[in-house]
Length: 211
Image (cartoon, rainbow, N blue to C red; front, side):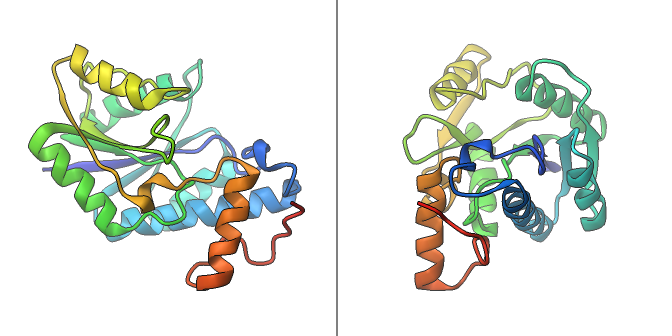
């Protein structure tokens, strides 16, 4: 089954403002770019087409350099309308299923993506919640479906309700590597501490943490 991975990116320069207490603007840019590069490498290893959806020139240039497609975000209203449009574009390009993957999951790996796609193939759709089981950290659904994206506060439950409304069964995939995202200073501090212990990743290397 043809799968397209869709990576929405708000802005590498102006994004991650919640991390302002611990990272200045230049450091947030560097951190966001490292996360996006990791996400692009992971979807490339999956050997699927990848589409970066953003108005950010730097993010789209990174997509192009990695061999991914980029879709300029022309919709109004933020993330959800942009993803609804991207899903239709992916369907028009031959995708049967889309995998929505935010670019702030430092531990996401190839096996995570295989697992999501496998569960979606059996159930119809699959979702991975964040650590609090409130937000959505990954989502796999049929491309171009009448399903409407509900990212935002409480999106984990809102996406499940939306799936039920449009007749889609949705499997829940709970994995630590999918659940950990970096939105707040405490998340960054936790990631930095893990990297200092493990030294297996490099996202926080050289970045100060004032907490």
